[in-house]
Image (cartoon, rainbow, N blue to C red; front, side, top):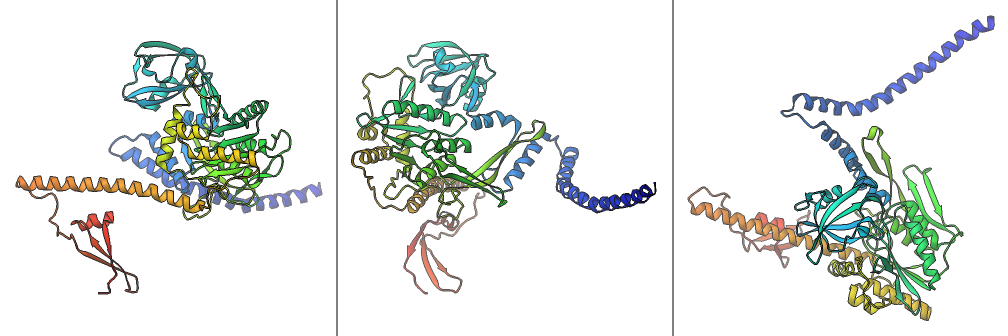
Length: 540
């Protein structure tokens, strides 16, 4: 009893002291959280109580969450509200419930670009080029693609009725039973009916495969295809990752692991130095060591950069094309409680086996994955758009054309698909298989090529903006003249004609660095649009 009477009060005193020590910490932590939220609660209450109109509280909350995500100044960190959840999950998983067709708006009507392989739309008789007139008696005239797709999506095993006008002018009502569609991400060069054709050199047994994005099914799709191509005598592969925006890290490592029997694929490093992960290839299931060319461009991003970079760093494949996009950031997806949406945020960055950081910053000179030396093959935007348009015709599911060649070749690719990069990749692969050498397409610097292409794009955008500014200026002058002729007060203040005037520029120390002649009378417009003529420097 004595021991108990002594220990009891002592223990109580110790526990009380511990509580007193911990209580201010807990209060401080709580206060820091509520201190952040308090002004938001105050603004919400003021607007709900006193704003001139009754606010939409849901819109206010969505705007606040989006603003918090935007405040971290990262384009890949976003808040996804509940109403956008379905489309977001579709992009992440590569699956959805619908009819399975690629669509677009043409002449203000929903048009079928092509039904998908093994899809309900194809089974129901939907054809490429069909114009969808109505969906469940709702006219598609004036609807956006998104609005039309919302009508086509639904629950599994439910029926949607569409009225289509075929290319021959006949109209037909089609009942389509929706089911879960798994987006196929592994494609060939062209269609033969429903199936893809992968052959690019029948004699040498060279094949072409394009991965459009990386989702949960990509690794399995590619594994099955490569097993099939091996049975056909696979001796070399062109792997096309152009325009591939990336996707799941697990899919990227699964694809890289197909071609690598060992070694680091990618390192993932977060803000905390202890939060790092290294992913390695395994020998089990590795494909034979045949020659490979990976084709990339400035729109190859994220997972596609991981695959291209890993294969290049380990000497497993040559990379051809232009420098990749430079998205080396890892996104985590976390649903918010009570179905309040999802936050997608950047948690780490990717590093290639060589240690190169894939991520591009605004002042970066090195980012992404470069083509191998001698493998830089640029295609400007105009040529690339022509190629995409030409290629589209060969991706449509339709009846096989008996006149089509059994296998593609570089000249067929150049003349029919207008794809110089793919033609060069195939020629490189042919040379490697025949002569055991790789070609050299020049010594272009991939950094300078990419910077030049970006400058050209910005120059084109600036020219378009300047045309708009000039058109606005001309219209303003017309309106001013009309107002003056009507005897009204001029809409614009009178301005001094500065045509031919000189603007002299000096550095901070007063040294002359340039003289420019104004080529338009409106000095404000001249300064905004930089319509200046450079003159010799004169220290007058």
